[in-house]
Length: 469
Image 1 (cartoon, rainbow, N blue to C red):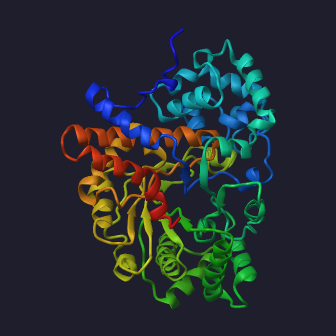
Image 2 (cartoon, helix red, strand yellow):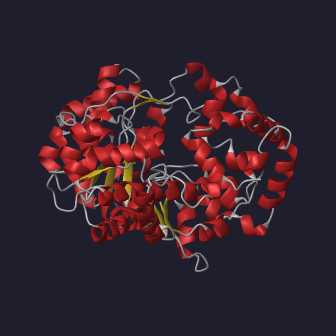
Image 3 (spheres, rainbow, N blue to C red):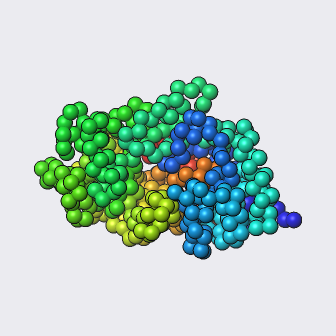
């Protein structure tokens, strides 16, 4: 049997032998550097409690919407994969379904990551991932997840993770983060991230109840819009006290609006009553994008913006399984005009960091790189979600480097709920960076000495710089 492609030392490196040799030498400099993950969705309580993974399905399939969405597209019911509210399904049968459809993932980013996890993290022969061997593989992985050496903290250390940021509700007490910070046996940094989307979107489930609870909890006795702003600022301070370095905003668009406070207060009250129109809801969210930038200038949290996704595109799937179950779909974006009011007021503010993400590749070279190439506050967010795969990451570097260079990027963002995919994703990014730089060296566009400096910067220094680590 031939060795797995997931273990091949030249995976993702250039096919040309001369360029590949340069990429190999560059990769060797960063392959074993610590993982810095400043944006992700792993639950801090999993690490604080060192909770064992319950079964192979829960480890690799159910929480990963990259995986479940493609199975759904090929006729698999999400409830059979234990997605969202479908937790009553048999995990073993879900695993059999996955193995039966394994070939669907050939050529996809998910397939690359999964194969790398199987071979390099789990020690599995990936030639035996099929329906015939599904039960045998399930039993082997079940024994592995029951091994005390395979618990989250042990994997955190084994993966070489130095910094891991979570994504957290503004009213979270952050007790799990506090326990980790106080635990002298845990050497890593697990940082909370302030994510206020549910308290900003008028048409989100339970907005009025959540916003009122926020005001009542942290508004210092002030009511209405004034108490709302005060409460958000106070909760940001709570996060900072627990180690947070950034606030993340999953907005509909990148629009920022400098709104008259009286008008914002009027819209806020309409939002609480459930009377706001879609246009008013969008305007209020744009106003809050501006307000969050103002707060970031004042308190120093890095502001990351993740717009351009039609959330819960399938009403049927949302009703059956809930949010974050694979049917969020990107749409075309615009940043230059949308962010002008925000950047006019804060773009050159001292120590303000604004990291712009997109799933619309057309705006990397047209808008985001030019913005980052002028405003000292703006950083180019790494390829995210549907475009954090090798070919798109190479296109990203080609699109932004000519205008913004290497110094204005965020570093790689794994953005994952699937804990065991973290090392695979960072490895793919490092190999892609080595490949891109090797081409520039081979084309005599930069020296190899500079490429050595640059690859360490983009892999390790860039995320520390952009996220103030």
